[in-house]
Image (cartoon, rainbow, N blue to C red; front, side, top):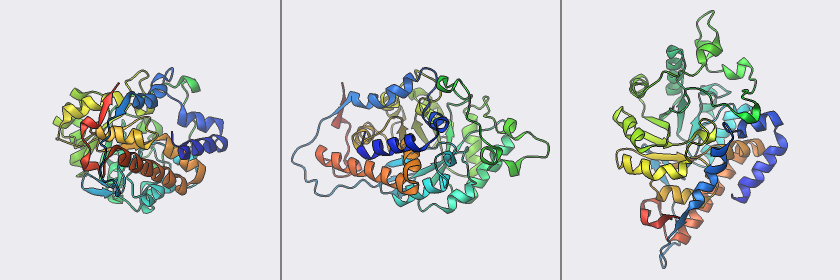
Length: 348
């Protein structure tokens, strides 16, 4: 792990209450997947090219037509107000300052419009399809109006995974946080929390529904199988995000690092594939990109940076990872992301 990320994590642990810290860091079950996700990237080794002119290294990339200074994005996560008084506004501002993609969660603790107003870079909106489909449609409409450039459909959360560390209990959230983007769309007399519960009946048809509803590209997050990725693309998905939800859903799910190559192989050139899960250094990022990812996402490091320093912490985390990526690219003999070839990396 980079020193900057370790220092921010230490500072966050000192600042956050034990309850909030456990909420952000806990994994499902025995937390096997949480523990394995980072070390899984260590199973790969690099085969660098010598005698390459690497005086200038470019980490810029394009995702779904938008330009970013870095392939490292902030993954969607809930309730940033638990980490910092400025919540998602600080997070998206920090990402924008680093010219990085930010993905806003359905479970944001500020209004979508409020968060979008603090953005200076393109951002995507993550969708939990709720039991009340009309409610989902209204929230997606709010995201479209606010300027979201794509939707990220979470596909691995029909139910919330049980976290033994917290005895299976979810952190208590006041309605003005939990329902901040939902309450104004609720019909009279409807229980907001029941209506906002995730719908376990969603299926591949949901992809087309979201596309027709929003007019935006839809990526599916939570894919760990090549055949599942193909099924999503055949149903209309515009991208795939290889993810085990930070180990917070199905414990003992395969680490994303070990699922990525298969998904990339099955997808081919049909759509971009992104990945998250345990990425903590520029070397991890380089390996992911060499295995075929179009970009990577980081979740908990963004929360630790936010807790430690607000928007400046999110920015410094992203910039530290990007600078480290640039450094290891030069050492590997790579000057830009377009030059990456699969034979740069091997699994041991």
